Figure (cartoon, helix red, strand yellow):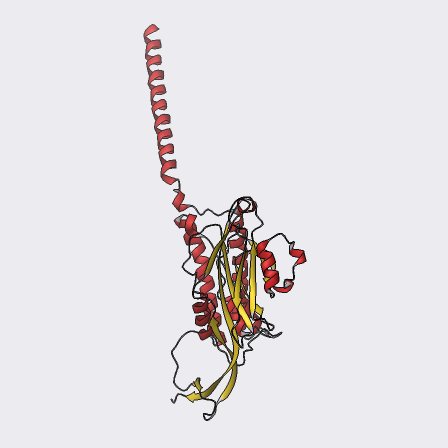
Length: 347
């Protein structure tokens, strides 16, 4: 009896050891498999709540405009001009400096999709940048006023105001009370004949220069050369955006959520000086309310001259602690008339 009991105990012990090894081995395999299947930080798309909302909102708009453009090709859209304008204004900016590779690729895909959508719309609207001219095609070419078949076209001439971007720092209120300033003035001289001042304002919490700084005039010129100016008004109309709106929409500066300040437009030197010196409440100064903005982020815009010889752009940082770094560029616009004739490319 004792011998049989001993044999049974040996079998039980062997079984327990086997089960224990299997369980331990399987546990090791599970942990190993888990490690092998875990995504590295570079493989995970990571967006903040704000970035995610911006992405999703933009994506919905892209899908909507893509569908509308398809309908326009089928002749099912009545206001095609508004559709092209909405596509032209569509923007998606993201800061890839702190993104991992997966997030960067994720955002870049949407940006590329927008680029393709805009190019498609430009081709449909006759604004394609392609230089190829098919044979058997009537092409408009510039000519002299007295040339045969000359047609007058109202357009614009642009003059760069500053040789380089005006860069300055607006200190926070606390630090400005010790040194530096939380206010600044940029005086914009108005060339003879100019009717509008176009400006670009980039605001950042970092003083690092961006590759686009100082390129506002060049970029406006590039956008202007790519559009079809025929039958297109210089200024905004109720039916279609004008030349100025189009080239501004194409060249918006990079915007940062945490970078903002107040912008005031003065037309009188005396009020601008009082603003700069401080000690006078803004409400007691004569500034152009229509073109002034509180808490503005990076932006561009146009200001009508209205007879001013100098326009004073005034900036104020109302934040207590944080400094803002600003880059300001300005271009004057003068309406002008150009002449074109039709050149036929034979078959």
